[in-house]
Length: 201
Image (cartoon, rainbow, N blue to C red; front, side):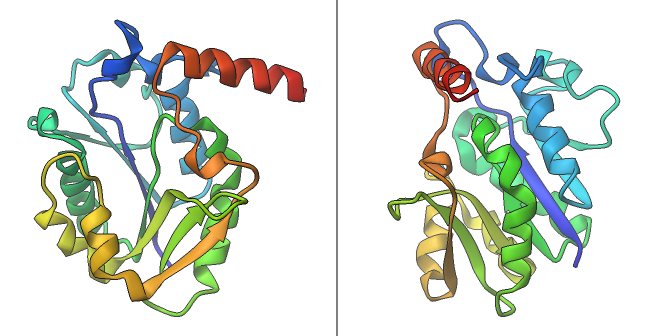
């Protein structure tokens, strides 16, 4: 099975009040490169969408064998990155695509287990991570036959319309704690996550 991971990283990071959440430090490196390395360890192809080739995020990927896809219409919402990323996965002849949010570093240790769980499901399954209490979250793994549907996505609703359309195919996989929903969008989110990480250590 040819595995692809899409890391949508073309958003504006608007809630960081001037900062960039994907450049925040995770384990001594920018969050985006940390997530890209985790993805590379679990998949054959890693696709990263960016708003422009000269964006500051691009430098964090120097030397990494990722496929960078520029999204000129990134301001129209998450759907622009999903459309571009799905096209890249189709071009790479991926059998499945994991959509991995770039601002959720708690997911990094779980990617291999998610691929393993996906491989054990019937063909055509969509695998979605959930929290310990059953809340639906990320990442989501899509089979290749659904990727053409990504071209119908619009606005900032993410892949929700596709998940609704193919709801009978959904299978849920629990991750520890609230990792499946622990995105870090604000300076306060990052401060709380660092405090929790230090406490756990």
